[in-house]
Length: 273
Image (cartoon, rainbow, N blue to C red; front, side):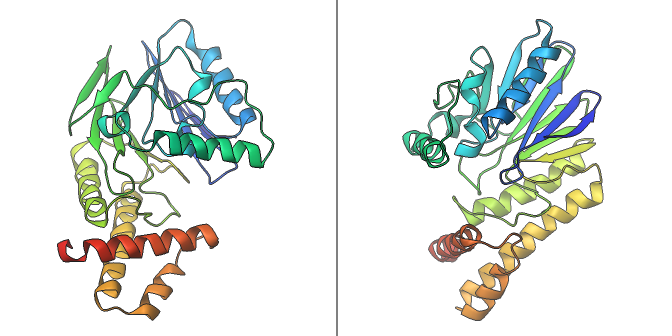
């Protein structure tokens, strides 16, 4: 469903996990971020892209390699793909594709395109790396913590910031990589807000915002959750760990599993936190 359509930026949000897909229309190109989830949703996005493309090259940006973000890749076979070096060398590509296959089989879903892991044409390997397309500059920052292969992207001069699975308005941190790295990524997020003229933040799940104070608050909320959870683990305070876990929105077996995974990762890293 289309939830934002202002000038050069259009945001679609899936019915599943409030996952966002963003289209940025530049003078010389079209940029599409994380097309997802259901076949009808991917087709709506594809149709929008073809309607506005007018012969311009299509760039397909993946914020990371989680299956819900790469599931629409095959519907855009002629795109130039942007992703991190860690995503290019993802150690569990087959596992991610298996999750897509399991999802589609469980819900009897047929797709009109092949399910494959993205082949990356423009590999991002360092903070501050840029890709210039005409008058537009894409500036990238590596964003590990949630996953190893996360990527922030700032589109200038528009001031659009694509944050992937960080800085959601409702999701607390999910650690599938590292608490230490996640905290450093939050530090970097604060620097990006100060360094770039950000006008629009678009997370991978949830609501966009144009409010700089809210952007900073989202960073602080993520940091507060992690620092309190780290302290609870350090003190081996089971009650405090449980109470912190209850702060997650949309409580379910999935959010409980994510919270327990957070605790397990923090325990492994405790000496370094």
